[in-house]
Length: 90
Image 1 (cartoon, one colour):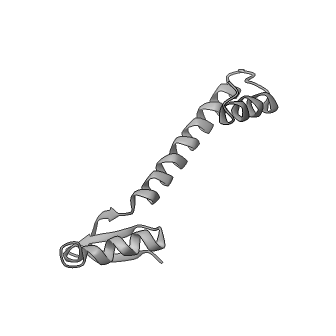
Image 2 (cartoon, rainbow, N blue to C red):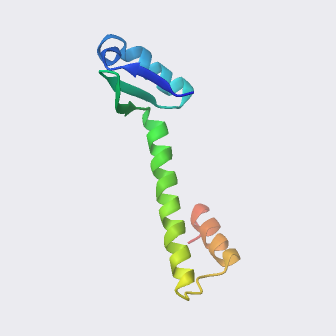
Image 3 (cartoon, rainbow, N blue to C red):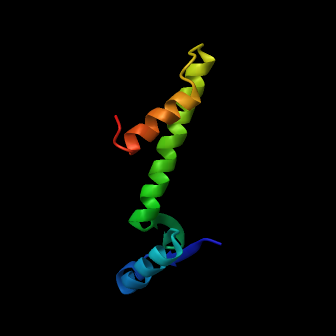
């Protein structure tokens, strides 16, 4: 169940909100006059969401490339290149 707090909690309980976001690794939905207004989350959660979004975008682009007839590269060749980069071999 999502955590929902009134906007006054940002002023009165900012440390509690920060702690909740970091411990639970999930956002808090902030309401203003009973209506959803914004979302507060920890940087780690935000960065993870951004990385996932970027990955999904790249996968979508790859699917379009394949649909347009691009052959791409063999998985094992790409994996070998990535391992080399991680190990400093390239």
